[in-house]
Length: 634
Image (cartoon, rainbow, N blue to C red; front, side, top):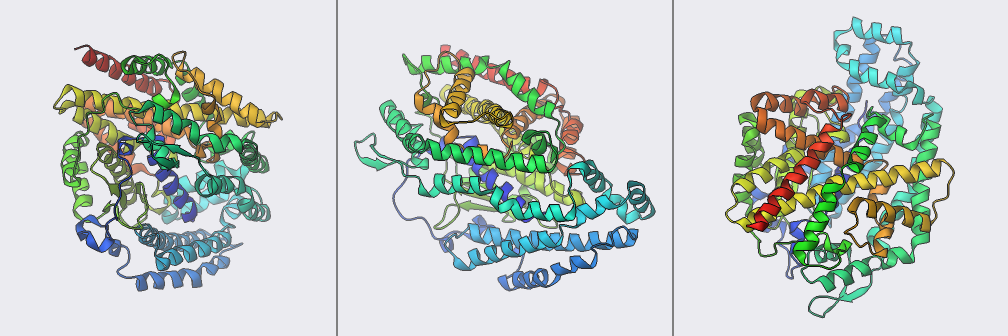
């Protein structure tokens, strides 16, 4: 029951990465790095800074709750071995567990937000670190709960639930534990697996350290002939440069260290798969994929449906490749040509205040209540807007914290992409807000499987609004291009990653050795299949397996594509059906974990076991391409 803030923090960070890379190389990256000092936090008007005092009025109040956790988490031992004695004893444990969980949720939210607005502040960093240390102790102290609940005969457990009205709210919670009974081990073995966790995560941690800290990229000449040392950020910006020779230099340069260290990186890659195989086998799962999807009770058929349906519908991606090659006037189309804009003259800017007005208009199809709740967030300092010295980069929503509203981090730069990022994050924010305000504690969160639906829904509605109100043909074309790039990056690209991840795991489970050359060959073949004959694949692209953090996330990436497909389907329903579809979607936003995520989506009107939601994205891409070709022909 205790909701690990460590796993919640992982979600926030994974989502932060998604914003920066799943949508990949977005409009904000047109802007080159600017010189000059960033503003200091005390130079920003308070209305643009989130108000952490909503959580704790002072750091001293935070310390009071931290001391309570530090002193009382050991009280879990009072319940160990007694959960089957009576309904009252079970309920007492669950109430204590909830108090611990809610308190840690508030402690974590305050510590994370305080840290992220100034990463150089040692007090904030120290507060966060000591909370993480205590969290490990809390997790160990509460680890007996699931095995002990499973040791209670089912008929006895359900009798306890029926006899006590306060336990009835936990029906779904108990059902989910029973569902995974055959994969839950004894208390001693669960403790052993927990102890092995840090060792099992070494491959991913080493890759992260290598990819973010130790890797050394070469120096190349920029468009003006200046010597510049490559970095992840400069690579992203360069892929939008209209200087093709510069794009090619950056592209080839960024892959040099990955090729040089291919053996080491292949060892990390294989080590991660073997760690997941160990856990899957220890818990008696047939495969790593089955183990991963079973956490949220997602059938393998959902994953297979996505991959198979996308493979049957690669034509729009091939069509986009051919169209872009033609408009750019290229004899050959290469991977470093995929993100450069066809319409570089369109550079419309938006202030933060203008973006609020745009969102309130664009999201009107969601209904009056949704708009009113958005205004509540805008007017009450739930959002930290501007980049300041020491502030964490990127963007995120803090997610659901019981008995507390969510927060959003931005780094506003007046770009069109900032408006889309804002819409995306407010989708998460409203999802968390409605879930937290509607569901009881056991279900006051939502699965990552549905986490991107609300956010990409907002983006879809924003795009429709901006297209309808575009002032010039060029602006319309640029907006269509943006959406096409998002479909490529979030739908096709992530499905390709998911297919590659599945293939490499299955080959390993069959006992085949994934050498660096084999990993490279498999990735290159799949890239060529997805992009089609118009793409001339450079040798470097085949080494992308070595630089993609997604492959250390344990069958995470397919959910980007399924969420994208679900949101496209639901957005169309809202536009076509109006209030009935809105009501279903708002119910979806409020459902949390009260049902399994596949059922929550089905209630909203989307069956992810069906190819129809996948085809809705395919159809949308074809319509956008039709419109682009029509406008270009005028």
